[in-house]
Length: 316
Image (cartoon, rainbow, N blue to C red):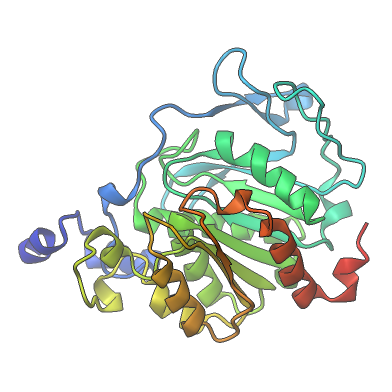
């Protein structure tokens, strides 16, 4: 064990614990995770005891309303997740700093509509993620679900690779209990989030599709760029192995000038996918602004239309 710790520069958990998590041999690498120093939101009780997301600091921007829950994972963490159902009459407030006007409808009314489950990047939490991606989901006429990893935002514990797997599994199980069907679910992984996204997608064969946004091909190669090869049993997030087990269509989005994860990682994942959809190589974009490019929404819309066909195009 000492040799492996010296070689990988991280903390490796006992094999017995890792086997329970299903995450591979290398489980806890602290330098992979960079939670914001302060949570970007609060969780408080609203009318009737319902949980709501609040601003991270006094006077901060209010967050969209939705179905907010605290979930206990298989590894004992308590994580925060939010589901925002699509509503055709949703209109954001005109003043940029005021609240959104979305009122969450009962969950069963929206379960047949496509649902996007997003696993976010390393340096953000729900406070930064939800306002933007709830708007993306509205443009795509989809329900939206997001969560914070263990140790991020208002979720408890300390982040690790094994915990992110348990985190996404807990949210997936919650969506199942609430009525979301596998065939209506799009898993969306951005940067770090590509790891838990592909891990789940490799195990769940009936999901509708996968979006990989600025994804890396290998966790260890990402933190040790000079490495040429890492077998999956000792890798952290062996995405290039996992993607070959995914049965659903996979759409890869990557900036041509990504300085954090080189675009060649995206090209490699696209090549390895069993059912690759048309990729989007965002010209001139870097790691953090692909979603601001002009073709981002149109490309995702075409991807969803390819999966759901006329039934998706007709949704209002």
